[in-house]
Image (cartoon, rainbow, N blue to C red; front, side):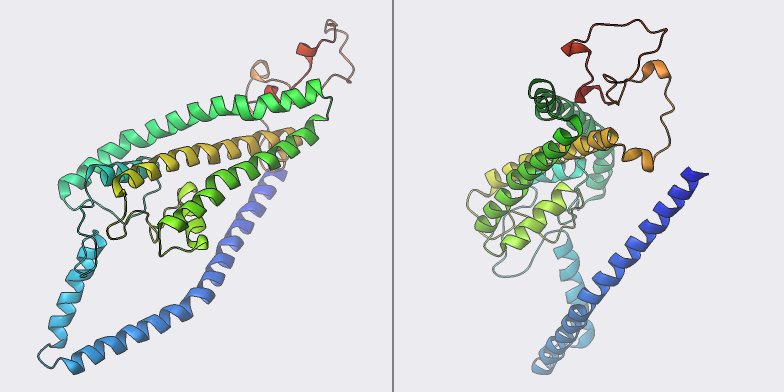
Length: 308
């Protein structure tokens, strides 16, 4: 009964969080939207007044065609880039955003055959990408999580829970600097129209696989080494996703150790033989039926014994 009460509170809290987000975003964005709409109406009316040979219906049809083409990355502006959105580098960038589920939506297939191929490509590519990322993160956990935790616990004698907390903060700061702050500075210097906040916003939205598509790198006119830039961004996304998964996995293991997950999840339903001890039992009383073993370094519970 208690678990259902906790679940109900979680759902209510989540819905309240969604409503709060909707209220804040609506309050911030709605006035600007109304202002922009009024400005566009004034510009359209001014154009029609200055061009008596153009009627309203003809202008509407032209604008609809332009907007539709712009949605597929084709622009009629004089200073727009004439480079193809489907060269190899751009296609590689699109493929990486497709299988990593980032999906900016800025570049989309133009043909029905391209859309059909994307379905089958993502059907295989998304699980394949998750498999590659999971295998890579498992090995990264051994190097950047379990090994330093074990070292400070066994060789330095620090308390395990304190070490895990400090370790998570240090790891999160390292990922923040290496995959958000530094790339944001690079993007803001390459993309002349991006501020540092715009670049940080792009990095965060991308690595969280949200991919809104309002900021896409490598779309400026006559950009230097554009193809190499596109390929580099694709690899940055893959490495950044590994780093984010590393943070999530580390947080999950630390939460298990500190007992935070027990507040929200049901008890593990695995067989007892499949479970490994979570709590440190070095100071607990041994059962009479359990044979006593010498207290050695290898027998102590370490951070790596947490269920994975």
